[in-house]
Length: 68
Image (cartoon, rainbow, N blue to C red; front, side):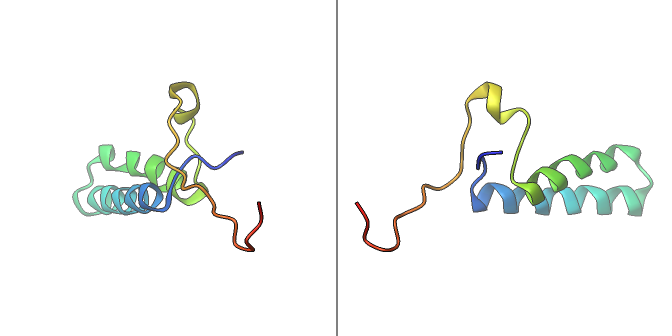
């Protein structure tokens, strides 16, 4: 799997997932368990929907050793 998500994208998904899961645990509302989706996609750095939509928020890696 190629990189699709940048650091900010992954971090925001992880935070949103934790908040939604916490909401589900506190209130008992099962909708909050949908937070598992952004949490998992943020942790693994890959989203099924990004491919067909052509979305890529991954930062370009710079050449660290002064290569061409």
